Amino acid sequence: IPKDGPSAGITLTTALVSLLTNTPVRNDIAMTGEVTLQGRVLPVGGIREKCLAALNLGITNIIIPMACAKDLEDIPQVFKDKINFILAENLDEVFAVAFEKSGNFTARKPNEKKEAAKKQKANSPAA
Image 1 (cartoon, rainbow, N blue to C red):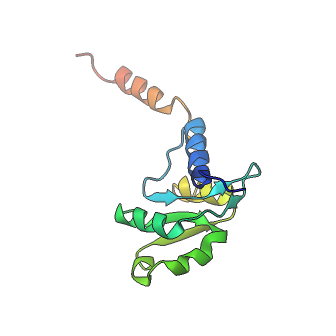
Image 2: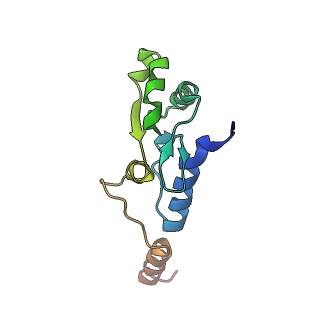
Image 3: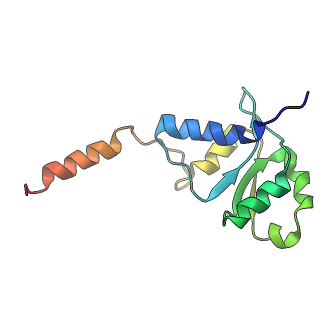
């Protein structure tokens, strides 16, 4: 049975985890891949087109399903030399890259920014 739209699975899942943990996603990566309920990353089509589109936008770090490694043969070497392909088999591998911050995936406290702003306001002289 053909299906449409699973390519954004890891992207949507990563966005939801980012929202729920208040952890920003790196802004220098693109990603594509279907995700299962068990967190496995499944292959999708159009890898060549998606990678070239990302490169055209200046994005050189791209997460793709490990099962799509063979599709990289369709990308001309001149473009492959400019792209850092990250091959992922599961969401843990996706998150390790997408939330990379000094090599750790650490969630910020939800009210961290608000608390810092309150402290700064309390410590500043009244105008």
